[in-house]
Image 1 (tube, one colour):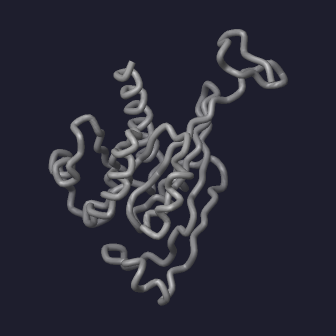
Image 2 (cartoon, helix red, strand yellow):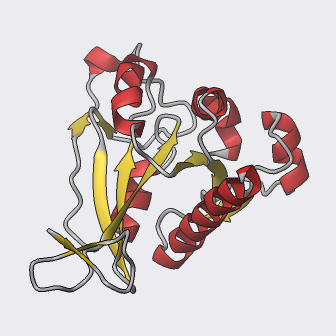
Length: 201
């Protein structure tokens, strides 16, 4: 593999064109918050999903409080891809939210630019493990409030106070079913990560 003359640090493909730059972004949050839906809304390829049907055997493990109509659960991860103009490729990894899958988080988060922590205002406490995880590792993240039908709207400062977020952590509204809304949340996350890198210099 060669290098692009216009950017000595950027690899070039066999045909001399610039190789794409890959960025890994995580989508995380509690059980049933909409991670699989968000990845599916954004990806340009058929999303990789590792969902299984909820059964009575998991009744005491996967609490469906607040999501009574949920019928499946992610048992490994979700995966999607977005190609941006200019040779930027974003790989999306949806992390499973249940505590029995937390052992996978280190592997999934390795090499990531940052994370979108998806939150349901009806069950805000479910996103605390994700927030704690990224705070302790100094990984850039934003909180995206998934706009579920019938859920009460809260002010940003109310949510920030309830989650005890640092002032610099962005809080945005997001509808995981709508591509444009998800794209805006992703842009906010990337901008936030870039800002943190710039401030650290």
